[in-house]
Length: 594
Image (tube, rainbow, N blue to C red; front, top):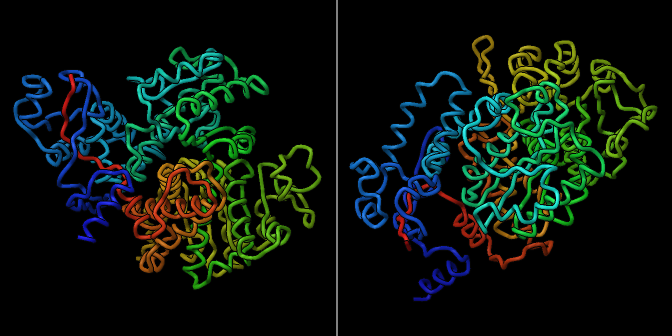
């Protein structure tokens, strides 16, 4: 009796449905997840064709006979009941017949528009193959052609024409419960530059990963694009461009639009997490610093990229038989001093400080190179405050990347420049002369803008390097030996950060949460994966990774008194609490009040 009461109280404490038996869904190319055998019904205030045309509740041919009667669907769908497993089979037959990645992206987007449950079921069961289709690198093609392939609205758009109206227009979104917003102003889409409102494919794709990898409910996510104009002349003269044909707002006018947007969404949804995505270098960090202590928000290009790169570095050290503390002995050259490059450098810098270094000692382990060369003190006036922090005084400034590598003899080479093939053969071979296992991370997206390919890195280092990239590369065969690659994908980090923040109702996202996420991610890499040279876990483990990161975020929210809900003190109970909060794509029984 005592154990029964304890279980009941525990479930009541978690504010979730009562416990029910589950069956494990396993796929070799997808995540494993538990589907409950007994599913509580969902109550709707609609019936008939209104249900069929709602992608959140449309089941296609998956309505049972009793449902068809009580929902007024008899005769509106084909008569045969087809369970979700068979629907998956039908969709996959069609998917495999599509040749181009962009057409696959469009096919999955159309499925998402008509049946979100089926879309997420297929995405989760095929996450390894489909994540690059739904998000990077294919989403870059979708952004470039957004005006041509646009079919139906998804998410919300805010613009300069909405100034003074944003606090009321947020109520046009038909949901009182939004957990996560991903917002962009389209100014720096991946490495493709200013794409204006055609960058909307980025928030849509990112939120698909919040759902599939992090377990956020699809009913509780909102993609947003803020149209503050575009400076892209091609778009300004394009009759198919969907945004305002004006040049970008700057200064106080720009700030006014962003301020009103942030106030409006938090006035409507006080607990919402806002993730900033693909903002230009001159705005990304100032916006983060402006809002991070006032609202629950973070910038994935800065903090997420930094966190996943730090995790890769920690795993690389482990693969060499070193400890996390040995990060203090690394010499790091970073090509790229924009928001992403600075985010990565700052994350590793903070990691060194947490391992006992002073700020000055940690700073001396970094050399930053931009398109003009090594950052030095002679051009301070043209640099941001964070760039100035890493300027060198002890070496000639404006040196080329190759000259810097010759002088510094780095152990780690990071690429976040958006400049393709800048890790040349001379650069990589020079690095490999002085380091037994060089750590080479060309992190720029999409694949076409990577600083070098996996094949080049392995060939030029005779297979000695530890390699991770921002976009995926296939394994490399050299002289009959296979060298495995790793993708330093931010999806290892942001879904877990988001899930932890949502579950704990944290008041803000802290640097300690991201450091804990890096450490947690590094621990999920198996010994077998490390032996193959991989520095990130298999992507099929992403739900487990997100759950573990979310638990650590909750623990920090409790410790730092940032949680706005009472969370279990016991680790096992907290793990259960987080897992029970994660969305799983199955067809719930539907009933209607109409």
